[in-house]
Length: 338
Ligand SMILES: [Zn+2]
Image (cartoon, rainbow, N blue to C red):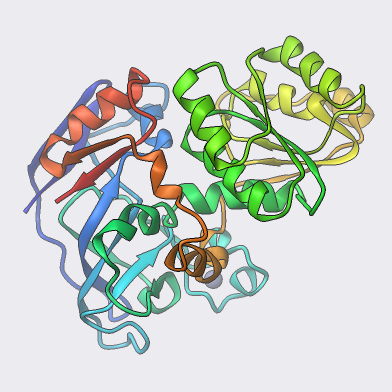
């Protein structure tokens, strides 16, 4: 089989790799229906996150189960399944608390930009749909593997409630799906921070009521202007830079909550600023496994259409173009079909 390998900055190749097989009795092998490039894949692609040797890529996936190990009881060959980017047993104390991405047995899935994938801890990790989905639902179901679940966690961690005023920092796919999530949770006002026309339009389609184009302190000032000087009840931080983090903290009203899901790079929080901000902070790698059953229902019943974030679809063997298009911000998110 051929699969995706990152050799170094700007160097993604699609080349021969071993076809995965069952290694542990708790594994499943799935044939990928669709996979995609994640915003977080761009950190090593841009050389910001260093890699010591060529690494296989991909952690968002859905597909048909081909084979399961001898200890797998729930997942069956022929089922269409979606799983999180972290495999989890779904039985340990952290999983029971709803934090499957901190599972005591967690394993990062790193080889999904390929036609066939080995998923560890299959019974805990994978959720099957009622039936094999129609083709037009596949992009939206794929988003549940990471990006939609991450946007949902940002809104959940920011404690979005019916009637909330919400601000979303970041107009990448996660931020845009944070808008859908806030809308679903009943937010009354959703302020999307974006300076790109096509992303602003999608944000509005997903439920944004206001757009703020300013960033940093000016962005904070605009949020204050729009909220009578108070700040937003809930702020979703979906970038991971120092500027976006502080923009989010200072856009949140005293007593409000900020959910942060952008993987931080070089972020340092000043204790004194945090102390006087009076803001609840919660975030981290999204436990998307917690949200999968409910989000599958929402997609299956066509209540949400998060697959709209894919504005580029490529055959899997053109994966390098997917990275380039996202790196150059020509595409919000690239869908890859084997
Ligand atoms: Zn666990």
